[in-house]
Image (tube, rainbow, N blue to C red; front, side):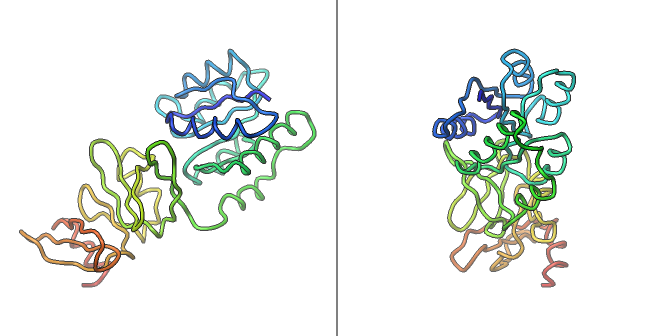
Length: 249
């Protein structure tokens, strides 16, 4: 089976390509770095299966499928993304499967096998309820990019996130990496609203991981995260009022 890999991040495409190389019966025939390239490639090379990212510049994954709505021979589509929030919409557009980054080889192999069976008429399209149950099982996680790979972290392990230079860095007690979002506002929408709060225009903190609040200059504060030896982050005067209401301090 001929597979097209679509993702705007080169490390993600490399990860998928490496996994494909270990799965018998499937080969990557091309890759695309954005939605427009994906549309052109699908029309030109007619892949059997497309591993399609959702959040991409230009056209997102769903817009790619809209552009292909009149295509006579539509490939089987497997969405690959760092977030689980699009799962329902993905299956509404008849996706074969929905994989969360970083993708495990066994999980990818199962998705590809399902796609192949559907294309051959050996299996019916997936049951929406069963697949959503699989996706939502276990703790909510977030994929962080570290050099050429992605690392999954539990949301509850995040200490804080900070934005600088157009990137959003997420920090846990053990590691730090770059989130696949463009702003703290976007990240905050992905996280549990009662667990994470803005404490500074450039910082988002996990309320449950605040260890100590120390007065600073000009009515500002410093937050000690995690434990007595954890990192310090700023709490600006404008956001302190809201945090006082939440923590009642």
